[in-house]
Image (cartoon, rainbow, N blue to C red; front, side, top):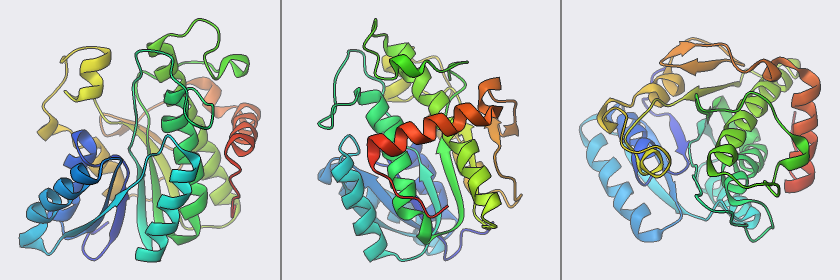
Length: 270
C-alpha cells in the first residue's frame, strides 16, 4: 500500500525498531502517530520522524502514555481518536523484557501487561477507527504452548519464559482477531511478525548484541505496507511462516481471548 496521506499509529516508537519504522513510513509520505512513555523522548522522536519525512511530506504527532496501565491505554486510545478519527494502520510495536518479576499497577506481571494486555485493549478501543490493517509484533522466540494456569508467572519466574509466553499470546491474539474480522465481513486485515534479531536495547537485555543493524530492520515496515491483502499470517524474515501449532487451535485462541477480555474489560466491535 502507498503510505502517502495514510495515518499510522506505532506504539513504542521513541527508539529501536519502532522509531526506525516510523522514520521509514514518514519517508514514504505517511503521517505517523508516535507513542512512548516519556514526554521528552516522544518529542525528540517526533522531531526525528518529521526530519526523516520532510522531503516526502511525511509528518508526525506525539502521544505520551504508559502502556503498563490499563487506564493509560484507554487514555491513549481516546487521545488518538480525537486527534485522528481515521487510522489506516495500527502497529502494536511496544514491548518490554523484564529481568525480574514486577507487577503493573493493575496487578499483572509487567511483561504480560505491556506485551499482551495493552495491545489487546488498545486494538479493541481503536478498531472502529482502523481502515486497513492491524500489525502485531511477535517473535521467533514465541513459546510453543500456553499454560493458562501460570500466565502471570507465579510459579518460578523466568524472564525468557515470560517474554516467550507474551509473544505466543500475540500470535494467538492475531489469528483470533483475523478470524473475527473475516467473519464480520471487515476489510481490515490482521497479521503478526518476527521483527528480526536486531541490536536493540531489548535484545541486549535478553540475549546480548547478536543481531543485525537497526538500519536493516525492515520486516515491520514491510508487513505494515505490503500491498498483499493477507490476513491471519505470521511473517518471519519477510515470508509467511508456520506459527506454533496451538495458534491454529480455535479453542485455545478463544480461551485466551476470554481471559484477556476479563483482565482488560475490553469491548469489541467484532
